[in-house]
Length: 449
Image (tube, rainbow, N blue to C red; front, side):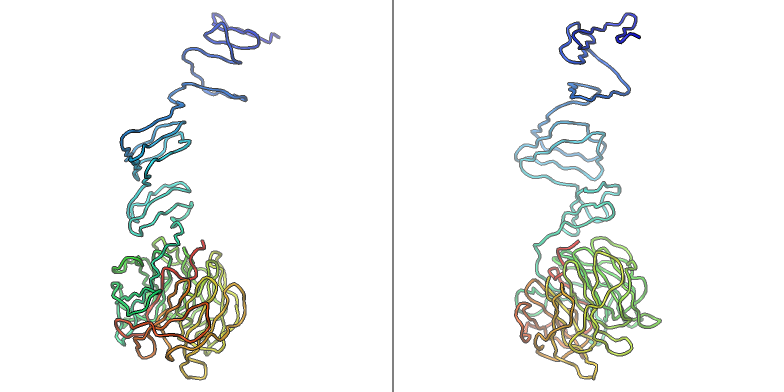
């Protein structure tokens, strides 16, 4: 059989093992002059197409601002260069074409798609960026959720919301943790309540559950910590519940234990803090109980829930791996069993504050743990005043603060995590109260995903 075939009237030249179409002097293995069309083409070596069906090796430079608001972008295999002093804006209605841009050089600023939480693109690919005006942060789509890009620049703000005076309150106070002074007005919760808990990222705080004159509630609401204002509905817990513990990482918040209509529970449920929606089952605590610690004791990977009332006042400390759903395991024990205490932490050390001891008296006890290593709590010092049903603890990397408690106190106290010793006076709440939810944008759980 012939190894070389030519069709009738073909303008086809084979010369020195080189093939030419439209030329009698080919210089490459295959050289085609003029237009061509093919359904499939397979090239095993290196090929250069100077122009084929709209695909162009082209370097495009813009001298004016570029605004892509909708439709498909063109297919381009070269570079897009935005000159100094110009901007490129891509709207949420724009989609990609069948190609991609190899590289993008921006001389001044680049603006990703931007909008409110409800404006997030609905069909994003993993890695897509979006600037959220509600939270004032860049987010990225990980294939399942919108995640906030981790941001270590925080205001160091602690917030206490709700509580009882003994009348149930909706007010929220805030303090700057690194300073001293009285709390200032932050805004209002949507539902007045007490005996509930909060979780937080570096941007957002979320409260869950609680009790008010109408009974227990499953309400969850959120607020942006760095900007004062009223809370907004987030979703619902799996059931109306009060007197639980809470813990969180930079992205995930958990509530554990508490009391529902049927009595004490051991369940843990969680949310993704940067989203909105209802809580989801996570696992169970090692001991069924209500009224465990009411503050955030956590590292970027581990959450701690301690003490409470379950068949009597208990001393047990539970540990949870926040990123992996499942049951908690025992970490150790407090120096004494108690309930109605508060907790706070930096990334390495957690402190448990006051509470009502098993034998009955309200205590000034402060004890601490090293979060990364299991074991029993160790004496840290004493609080300024004995108290229980304390408003949740708040913290930054160096200092933990707590407030209120007992029959409605106004005193705020603090300790420095690095040095053992007694607590010191910080200032006062705007209104004396107890059983408020506390959180901060700089607690020990930030930094983990």
